[in-house]
Length: 255
Image 1: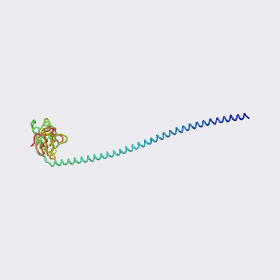
Image 2: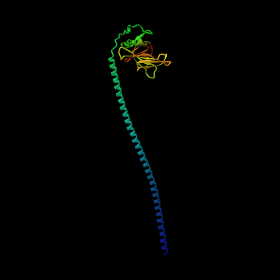
Image 3: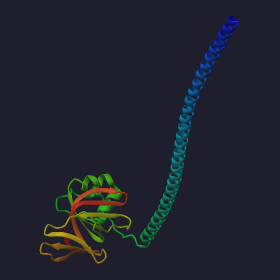
Image 4: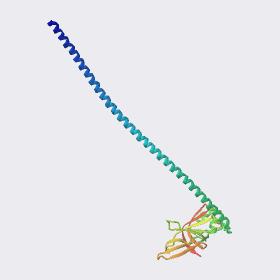
């Protein structure tokens, strides 16, 4: 009897040990799974955070792209507007130039050609210092033989005598511009004239019909008028287009 009880007790203890071992194993497994779940949950939370940040960055980039596109469209519209304004200005300028050219041509056609016979260059004696050259002859010589006229008139300062047709005073320079008459209106002798030494400055008056000078004392005197015959001494720079230029000139005589 005692032997049976002892065997039963041993069996019970054995099964209890087995159950305890299995319970411990089960607890260990559950704890490991719990830790694994917690790790995965953290990973999931991290992924959610990264996804949120990625979405935020995507939205920011989308807003930036939309802003850039809006600015591009705005700049394109401004450029198109500017180009249109430039085209309009170009058309207006061309139209104004065409009208001015038409007026110039009409004025030139309306003004009669001055009859003037100039002596041939080959027949003239060498030009000496102080010799006076008629403005009509000077232009006719250049129109007939520019190279020959250059050899004669551009080697020294010359004195040109002619009728004043226009006076101008450009800004920011000390000299004035006096245009002398030629046989045809569209052909011009442009003389750039410096102020006389006794004058501190020169200016135009009477809507460009007169040239005035200011003395050191402040007095204002008339130096020349349109329609008046004058003599100007300067360097002949030759014919360019329909304009013959005399530079560094000085007004030496008026009538």
